[in-house]
Image 1 (cartoon, rainbow, N blue to C red):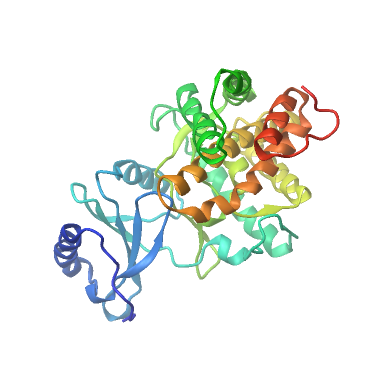
Image 2 (cartoon, rainbow, N blue to C red):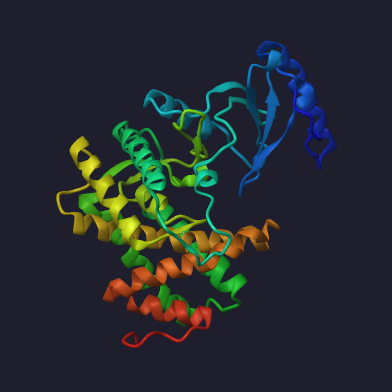
Amino acid sequence: MTASLPPDWLDPARASAFARWLAAVAPHHGLQPETVRLASADASFRRYFRVDAANGAGSFIIMDAPPAQEDCAPFVKVAGLMSDAGLKAPRVLAWDAPLGFMLLSDLGAQTMMDVIAPPAAVDARIEATPAHFDLYMQAVDVLVQWQLASQPGVLPPYDDALLSRELALFPEWYVGKYRGFALDATLMGKLDPLFAQIKASNLNALDGARVYVHRDFMPRNLMVDANGDLGVLDFQDAVYGPVTYDIASLMRDAFLSWEEEFVLDITVRYWQKARKAGLPVGDDFGEFYRAVEWMGLQRHLKVLGIFARLSLRDGKPKYLADTPRFIKYARATCARYRQLGPLMVLLDEIEGNETRVGYTF
């Protein structure tokens, strides 16, 4: 049995509901209710607890997802899709939909991020080692396996409407509410055509190739078990969308930065494996890499908005510490493509930086 403090509850009624649910579920799954402790919390309203099994036979995970804020049905659906695809993902063992409590199999406590152990400094780039390479190639294999299971009409489409909602987070929360700029006609007149260009590129790249998209495929959501195998978490927002998205997410991570050589190396190897497997990544790596960079740019702008919202609305200021990483990602992409020069100028204006020579729009 693991000794620890029980989870905190702000709502006594929900605490009572949880105690009743746990008491009912525990005998059927051999749980020790007295061992419940916090395992993790994410950027949403979800929390995860760990609870020990009887007789020292491992542990389980409990998801606490208040129904008023979180819909667990997508999680259950995607968990089934991942299982059908042969991926290692949490199995849903019990679910009380009206209450928002779920019992899951436990993939362990060590993430791929834990294994990498990145430096604390946001601007620090990691020097890749053979062990890092092996980890990322495992992640690439998992990603290809997930994408090969793709079927149209199963998951929500990653379409123009969704891309527009995501991009709108950047001006509303990062530019307006965090940086304090007025979202007037002049500013939006600059952003709107840039957003239209980014959306068109991402939706039409590689002849509009579509696959299953995890949407947060990165080391913090990949678990490493005792055998070194990878499991997948945090997949409830999966959609059917651009084949470029998850490799962009993996190699342009929200919480760590790699040298460009390593990013390029792993992306090439992913493209080679995906192409050999018959995935729609095209026959020209240069075209594919451009599509990945533009997809990454959309994600970077979206995440800047999300991290600002987490701080200002949800009281989670720690995420803002990583926003400089995304500004650097975005500027690096803008620097490579002349048609993104106006966005470079705008980002520098927002950040109070001097625009590099050659970008005066």
